[in-house]
Figure 1 (cartoon, each protein chain N blue to C red):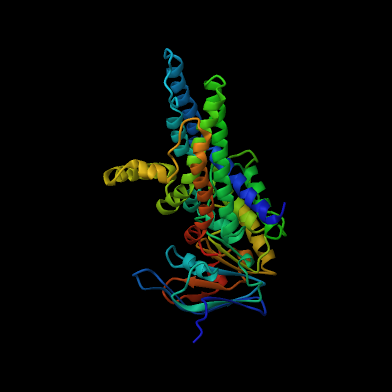
Figure 2: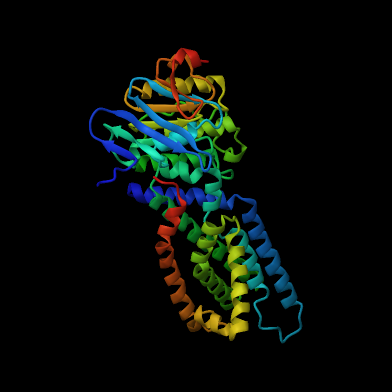
Length: 227
Length: 223
């Protein structure tokens, strides 16, 4: 592995360890499982025909994402750790690439936990577990640039909460102006349950937003100390 | 007319020169004015003064991390790139959840990517074990880790702001020995309000206690 790549991977690994050893990670994981279990308890104790809903998957995932999804730049800035790293040990680009990699890895790990829990609690219902995991992972990926911006602008440790609040406000504004469906369709969130082909617009936008993360580098660079 | 940058890196003999440097405090006038100073390898340069006298601001300007309001800083003889400078400030702290071993892995990888750790780590982390979370280290132990990593890297210019604060007497003595060794090949400037260690008292001392700094004798400010 080249020196540059190994530096990026080392920064990402450190950030992942820092995140997953935090209390927020435990709250995210346990909260997700408890909420999803409650949803399934309600589902399994209902007499057939059972409701075709997400069995609280959306609520559970949202709670976990709010607790977990962040880049760690606010914390690093508060500690002066970002300045220590970029003035002495690495370049801003490698530092930021490491943070992006860590956020994507955390998202993938959350997806893995979500999938395993959904599969177990639904007693092996693959279609259900895959659908909701893929759907919410794509939604999280779609909002990742917004999460980054929220962390950079507001210096908050819960940037996903800011984004969620902003999205709710945007939906309310869209409703007042015309219809919330305009916003939902524009973001590719207008999907049909278990029809995987309807995820295509969302997937395209999620890929686009991942590329957008790279374009946010100059904004991010402005928030770092001079090198 | 060509506007010169505030920190200029030039080829030649390794030297740090400050010309008519002025640093302003926001809406409170001059913190430092018309400062002329020069320092080279061989000894450690010291900036002393009370809290709020402008030591940290001066060090940031010398390190090229802040712009002066007037004058300029000339660095000659170094490689001229950002990697050729080390800077430490007391506000720099480690995150709390990762362990000492995690930090060792990260710092090794980063040092390797910037050309390798040329110098041996001599400060360590005191009694901290590899599995200790960084957040459970004492302020002194965490500071030792940060300084230890930093000082394993080669650099022509080293700027340390309050490196002695919170260190044990043994660690202070170790740090002074490291700085004296490194001063043979680097220009080192240390800002401190802890007094200048006697072992390193032969270096130039800049006392900040007013807008116009004075060059104090090392003996006068030695611990």
